[in-house]
Image (tube, one colour):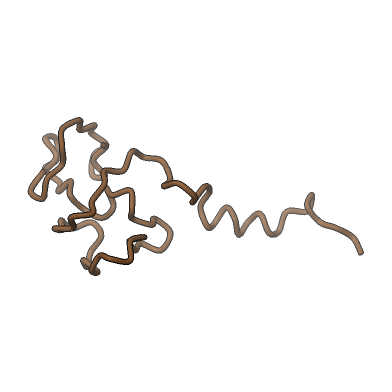
Length: 94
């Protein structure tokens, strides 16, 4: 898992009190979790409580370290999908 503060790679298990060795940022935070939706800045899980600041440490037991790729089923970002609506090449004339 990469630290969102400095990009340092961490291989060890991330616990509630884990911090980055390089920049001392919290690692058990929403933005480091695979369930965190980067577009809406909310959790995809319906069983978690709102933790406030997604960059601050939390005690969520559903935390899954994010590997830097989109979670399954999300594909491209919402902005890319929106831009795709206006491409001229996809236009169908009546």
